[in-house]
Image 1: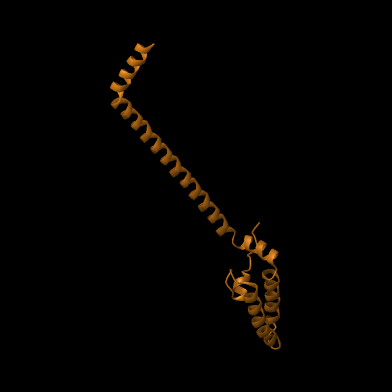
Image 2: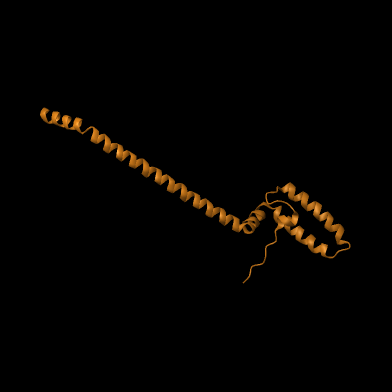
Amino acid sequence: MARAKLIDYYKLLAVPPDADLVGIENAYVRLSDELVQQAEYDSSACDALNRLNEAYAVLANAEARRKYDRVLFAAEYEALERRLASEARRRSMIRSGIVAGLSGVIVVQAAVLGYMGRDYLSDAVRFIQAAF
């Protein structure tokens, strides 16, 4: 079953998606005034005014607007969620690599120090053994 094409209320009101309520109200008043004047001699203006009223009803209501945006921008939300998950995985891999690298450095330093101090350690062990 094909989904009905969603009307872009932002384009209908000629406002950006981040427009505030004042901007939406101003656009609605301006456009509705024009359509009311056109309705006197153009019957299609009534249909346009109904769509404009519907757009205003959705965008002026905060909860309805959030739901509408979630549907209208679903692809963008999904892409953003995928990108954020990818960045989190990348940061985790980098962190793991850094920890592994530092652990390797510590092991090598311990081996070098042990090798360099083997004569002192053997002398200390002999001293302790002689004391007991």
